[in-house]
Image (tube, rainbow, N blue to C red; front, side, top):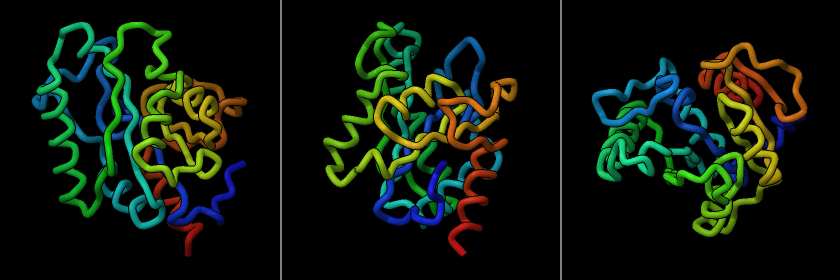
Length: 187
């Protein structure tokens, strides 16, 4: 059970990208800025999170880079566009971590928690016991568990995922639903 009432600026929020912040391409990758579409309410959600959490980061698997389907410049352009959308709504992501690794056993590729450890190196104040991972797949939930975080499942792309589930602490229909619930607990 997530202790919502204790969440404050000492907490960190980890967000998956595809299917959480932007539309996902099932069976494919968002390869360039032309394919990037922010989900409804996502920018407003991040602005709400920024008022509550001390640090907000993205942790995203990006195998399309490792497969040569897109370049690091393509990925950088997508992330710049994401930040522009978020900043227009008054929010921001502190840092975006990505795993281009092809090997599913790579320590940086979710569900392994290498990206969480990278974030903790960059922000030593991160305490995984005061962190939440938000994602739309069970691999995101396992990533959070592997790092010792709380987990929130958003049912944007996989509403059939059973709940309750031992990997999932809370479930919402979308990122904005979670943000608005959290904002209500803070008033």
